[in-house]
Length: 356
Image (cartoon, rainbow, N blue to C red):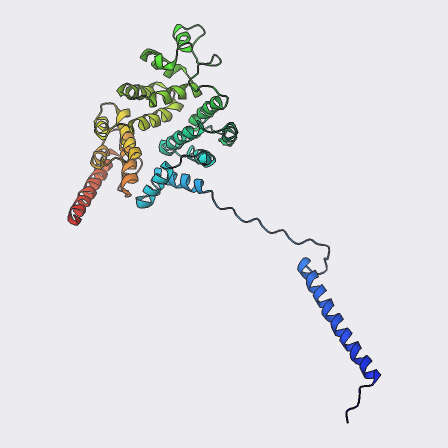
């Protein structure tokens, strides 16, 4: 016979149950408090803020930075060619901020290739950008340009973009600060009131020595875009006539102009008596990705060290190998490097013939 639990037993069981539930509730409350205030004894302390996640590089930044690495010879072979092709396909204004950042980086590099190519691409896109994009671009351009290899070029380009953002023709003639010529000089007065496309060669040569900043850059850019041999010859003359701080810009624009000529013309320029033309042609072969490998190997022997250096840089860019010469090499070392390149090309041709 089972006895029913007494009232006392029922009360005791109820007390135990209540105590157990209370303990569980307090435990959950304490756990929540610890989660909100992880340091004991400091219940009022707010949880530490999480460190912001690192943002991934913009896809356009990746393209521009890889192109710079390719253009200065750090990214070679198939990866380099892919970087060059990806950069050439940038054709929307969305890429402008990344191009600005790339230009700011390239202006520190003592190599005109990335600076000129990025700037050329940037100018193309800026011409079809809206005013807000133009203003943002100007605000993002590096302003500390002193003592940088292409600081003067960047400062002049800023002036050009300011003209464009204000709706002015970049080749418009303006009165203020136009040149260093004395007031009332007939040649200067004539240039002020004559469109640049109607200038005589004498006017152009005079402007090389008197125009400054954006106005000189406008003239050099104008010549770079003109077809025919005259523009090439005048740009080559400009290198010798412009001020020292604008010579790298003139050389870079001359090389860009030569990248638009045929391979036969490049061969002729590589044999020119004018050292500036030979140096620009050696650089242009790399710009254009022309297969003038043996002509470049021969140019490494050139008595002009800049011709040799540009030929070397183009060979490294195009073939993905670096067989010298090192910077500052003497004539004998350049001859040895040229032999190494020629041997490499012989073996390369034999290998290709064996596979065919």
